[in-house]
Image 1: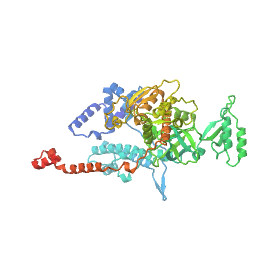
Image 2: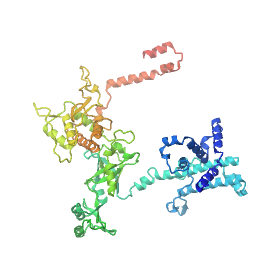
Image 3: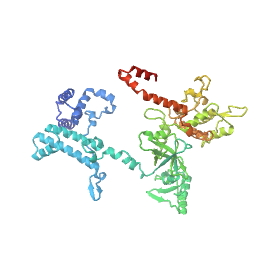
Length: 610
């Protein structure tokens, strides 16, 4: 017999003596379960493993199709054995230091869990010795006093359950049902989770290199994939940039600016791990260092000189709001450095992804340091790539609240603007564009030259669509119901060509109002179609343009909600009191009808009338 086969055979005998008669033993156990004489949840791990092995022998091909992870050619025996643990990795004592409190020394919580697991394993070994008859009297006394059970078989059963409990307690203290909650030791889950865990307190806490944290405030004029970084943060957050012929002039200027002027630099890292700290007050030293700066050469195989420069506009920052419950809780944003600010600024659109509001929420920003990480932020983890929810593919980004109101008021039928206002609204949507904008002819020539609000939407849309792409056509519905357009003493309008029907032809909005259905986080709206047709870059750009456009339009057409708008009118208040009074009296009638009781005919008739 080969060594591996002998080891496998020894394991089968060691764990519960389930060797050649395992099938018969398991068959007897199943009969006990069917008769109700055995609790299947209290089986030993070795017994469950034998069940799995026989299951794999009988239905292995089917299990490989259902669970492809078990379809491995490297496993000589049952692949389901990986679900069972026979050995525990013990971290070095360096990571389990003794704790000292008021001069007393206390064992590390991880060491406590490992010690209890070892004690449970030794208890099973002692019971086995007692069952074999080779144990001493002291071992028998120890087993009889410390292990629950009337017989040795019952003690063995309870010892196995205790071993399973101790094993689970290493990972999660909630699995330890036998220990008092007041003296439970935290497991790995408790060490990592929640606000005091390693992730939020240490790895993503306040004392992390190349990271910042502050309160977030709204800024609808930023692009939805931008994040406003205060200049105070930008001077402290640095990134290493190698000197070459393309960035030589820019890096020399940053070195001259020094640490206190943005955009500047804090350090110069030369080959040989020598780092030169740029002085704040010594301008001559910084000028000399800038003149000595030389780009790397292809003929020289050494490391180039590297400059640790400030965070600048356009750099990619990984933003995170805790708790991080899904993938879009961490996304890459383009930085925009803000003067005279102390808080992070963000557009409204990504709020749903972060589950954020602006009532004091804080967010973390991590300035990634190498080109690979920056590429991942730009191509995989950016805001546009997370436009759809990973769970069900529904849109995650969209405009909210005041932008929805402004969009409806802008696109409603009968909204017109003169040339000055029209141009101001269109140009406000494109914050930093350098391309020539295509302006449509006015919708009205006499008695005055006017453009409609729908034309503003069409102009923004057509100037955002890439030149080599076809223009979109959409026929959809608005969330605004048809009843909103009914005029008193007139018949209700039909749906076709009403403001509740949205029709785009060649990127021209012909009819309909745009509401939350089309630029909110809803399926099959305008933004969802743009993302599907033109990609995430266009979707983020059009959302950013709409955000600035609707914010500017609110300056022309304010929307307020006064106290008088939420007060109940006298007629409605009378009707409300009448309904409440009737509900208080009809309880008896409802009871009679529900339980088929013998009612008083006069009383029943009175309730029916009311």
